[in-house]
Length: 230
Image (cartoon, rainbow, N blue to C red):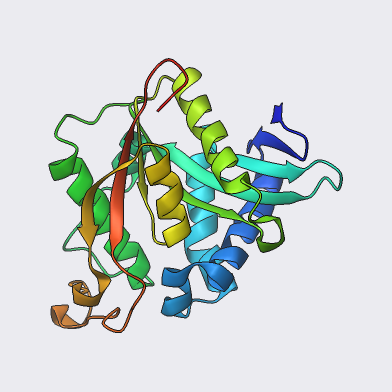
């Protein structure tokens, strides 16, 4: 357990806690994350179709973290993270498979595939690339550096305890992008959602994000060092 004056940072290790964290992520993404907000996904659907299955998949990896407010004991931030190698093995990208329940999943899956097979430039191995899949902070605790600190705790654990060498993340919001670039991240690919074609849906003619106006989505890679820095 890691703590500062106001928050305690803990591994997410049981299903009861994981469900609370998954609900927080779903609620905050629907309310504040621009890509999800544009997609008009309800909190219930996001939880049922995306967040909870992803949380459950990642739970055994022991890489996901939460932040708890010390004085109240409430969970106020959470991150879902997994080993990119094993995540890819469980759910390999299938370009000819059926469409996902929402285009958000398919565009991010395509970007995963771009990174693994093109941009990474080396063979993906276990315990090599930490994939930070999703993270959010409750709005009433934002602006205190909590989001950055939770990511630092998550990354340091992956590097120091598990031996990870890289962090891979897709930043769909400007605040999250800023955090990862400040941590030494490099943009290896950007996708413009306004021109992205949902190839798996309606014979590949649908452009669901044509009117999206919040910018490109980057694949960001952070190379980790072994001396406590990034």
